[in-house]
Length: 236
Image (cartoon, rainbow, N blue to C red):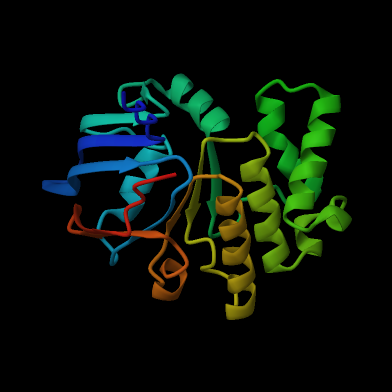
């Protein structure tokens, strides 16, 4: 008897996203089929207008498809309403953005804590999990610092800790090195790689080839279509 295959973290079938801009119909994503297994490290690449940001927004439950299906952790989320999508985002997805998206008046620890507050985690548990997340990104000694007291690389580390703190099934990083110098970029990609070796599923949206070379799988989009999928993970 063969062992049943694990349910993919992501399963997308015939995914489409169509926008109406004035009289023009924009087919941003066209007929994408995609499986991402637990523990994969994936880059999504493409030129401006290729559909990579639109695809990431749908994978992150920030947008809903025009047609097609999207299963996240075995749950069909394509037709969820706004409240249900917000709940899924907070529980299942950790986001890392190019612009960090930190609250300027909050300390590093308070920024990391926010997803736990929304999830209703007790204060004692929140403190423990925030400390663990900051330690994992090497910022235990910066917990009380506010964003303007941190370097760009440190702010991105805070953002990564925030993405981790709810123990999501998926980490999505949108151009995570776009505002950083080359040395700091390498450090951030190194941290994301470490998270992957610890078992996290990580997807990076990037236009930088040197970032993509660190990933084990590279998806390339053109005119909303998936035109290349190299390095597919077949075993865990």
